[in-house]
Amino acid sequence: MDRPGPDGYLPRVPARHLVLGLDGADLTVIRALGPAALPHLFALMERGAHAALESVQPPATLPNWTTFLTGVDPGRHGVFDFTTRQGTEVRFTGGTVREAPFLVERLDAAGRRCACVAFPATYPPPRLEHGVFISGWDSPVAFEADRSFVSPPALHDRLRARFGPWRFDDADEMNADQPGWHARLPGLLEERIAHKVEVARWLMERETWDLFALYFGESDTASHHLWAFHDAASPRSPAVPAEARDGLARVYRALDAAVGALARAAGADVEITVVSDHGSGGASDVVLHLNRALAEAGLLQFHAARGGRLAELVGWAKGQALTRLPPRLRERLFRLAGGRLPGWLESRARFGAIDFARTRAFSDELNYFPGVWLNLAEREPQGTVAARDRESTVRAVEQALLALRDPWNGQPVVDTVWRREELYDGPHLERAPDLLLRLHLREGYSYNVQPSGGPGALFRRLDPSEHLGKKGRSLQGSHRERGFFAAAGPSVAPVGEIDAHIADAAATLLARMGVVVPAEARGRVLWEALGETAGETTELPELAARRAAAPGDEREVEKRLRALGYVD
Image 1 (cartoon, rainbow, N blue to C red):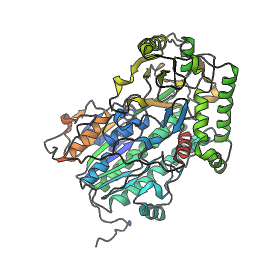
Image 2 (image 1 turned 180 degrees about the horizontal axis):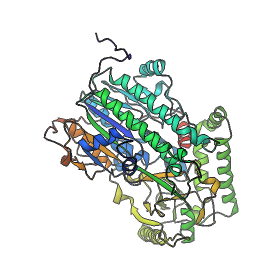
Image 3 (image 1 turned 90 degrees about the vertical axis):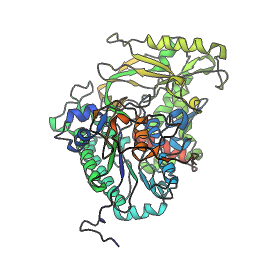
Image 4 (image 1 turned 45 degrees about the horizontal axis):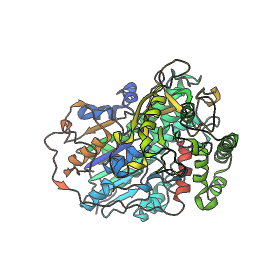
């Protein structure tokens, strides 16, 4: 029997494949920080392949990680957003609506030993016969993992006894506007990274893993909350001393050290993949209201003052509940009406001001997922667009949005209007908005899409008091459609920079594991980066998605998303 070493760890047993997910990690940021700050990431890039990894459009968290973890298009796995919409009613569902199995489930069925730890949109965890699965932050406990996160559940007890609770938001992002919060954030994220590394090392050294995958969300949290400190040119940059601008770099350095520590723990011959779901950049100080733009074009009508006042009141009530009430009282609030209250509030906030009987097109106005729905008579409760008028309505929306001009610089605001079938393929295409938007950057910074709440100006400038960001739709950092990918190991040739999509990262991982890429996979194998040692020999068994939502998931998923700043 192996005996623990002096540090309490068992002798190293190499992991054959190590996958590290760095949410929001951006190749441009990595290059700017340089090899002296990030020696381990640059070493991987030098001895293998790397890319400014292309995201699924739009570059939102859930559809991208779910594409990587399943290998298939969002049209097949069905996870487009944190919510699903039925008419004017919104439900907070997270990843519980996933329709495709995770690759680790299929690998497990083929006899491979896999560990998948902390990736978002993975609750409830699937049961693996040969491995472990720990779900990430869209789970039904707001800030701390309980046994329902972990498969097998008994592992939760061992981890908690040895390492303490597994927390998702010890920084309490709902109170990011409190004095000193941003100064404390880098240290909290460094501690969280170190905690994950310790847990991962303990897990890695207790099994010979065919695949060990671990998620770090700290790069995304830092980018959202610290970008304006990092980037002195940002229109939202505060007047702070130089040492206060190092927070984002500190978090990247901590992640680089984690990559090095875990690579050493995995063994000299480990195959490493580092991947992000999207990139990161700065947000401008200009707000855009898409539904007001549609109204100006005659495509949407707001209610009279009643609807606007209702949406405003709902928004105020949510803000008070989420930022002013103690956490325990917040939890009681979100238990009201059997967990349906959060969805009701969000539905009223998004759509309460819209007169659907006189509306042809409308938007959820999601900053991270800008899109437009047609008010189709065959689909919507108060639909007004007949099937014969669908195409003309699409053209009217395209014309109106592409004609939008920034009132301060005269530049176009909307770069591209896609029809959803141009981006996605699969049986769950109907879950995506009819039209998806790519917005131009404003002098290098993204527009802030915010709820209209009724008639008013299409654009506004953020007040300086809003520059550091509030939850929902005006965080100082935002997503970009190119992230980061690096691969190194015996199967990877030192080819330098390549072009790759996040789905390609999944397909290439399978090929490196000697597995035939399923026919339904979205991506291609990056053979240009692989040496002669990589090949396909094993076929994965077919599996149905095994998803089941426990009562109350909707309420708790919604609460967690608010803490992360994804919904207002």
